[in-house]
Image 1 (cartoon, rainbow, N blue to C red):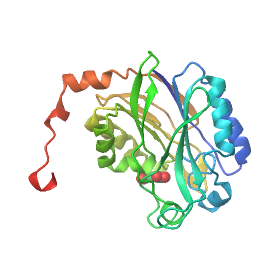
Image 2: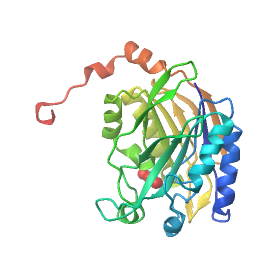
Image 3: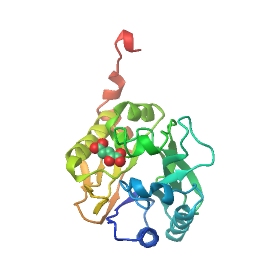
Length: 272
Ligand SMILES: O=C(O)CCC(=O)C(=O)O
């Protein structure tokens, strides 16, 4: 299964429309891959809270339209990172925005959406402006060999919450796909937690971060592909870069057989 992680770099000086066209061109250049992944909130700006309201759109909006076309032009499954989703019906906290991933099939059709469950910002940014998602999302993605591989979708800060990945594992995940806008200051946590999730759940981790500096936040880059064994198969630097990697989805099951740690899971009585 050939995957491409498009570690987009952007700053405040690039108009959103140009960024969208540039990202679409990068996706079109990935023809031949089975899966292409973009980072979190790359069009609206991962930390550009002030502009989220005006840049919000429905899951059938302008960014989605361009990304669907790019997926179809390239003939790839495209996890187009996330958008600031505006929905006519407000959520339980009375807000109408979500941080929502868009997944397109190779025919350009929208296959799935995932609303970020853990909002980052400690009372500012996401928790102030957005609702939290509350649904696990798993999709069976083409594995490049005529089959499919069960893939769990999560976003950025979700990476800090191992119980979410256990839940995805228990729903059959072999791969975790993780678009992000993770800052440079804590990039050590990012690479370490990506490896931890791969090791503890014996899954592939495909973690696509943002590069560049926007809204006074330097992004960390270091997009990373980690095998179910914990081996780092590829890791980007800090600039814009496309990580192109051939992964064997069957390695998750092979490794679980070789090293059957998941079969030894136990919960003390009170936690069952
Ligand atoms: O957890 C972190 O350190 C960064 C998370 C983050 O930037 C996000 O979820 O947007």
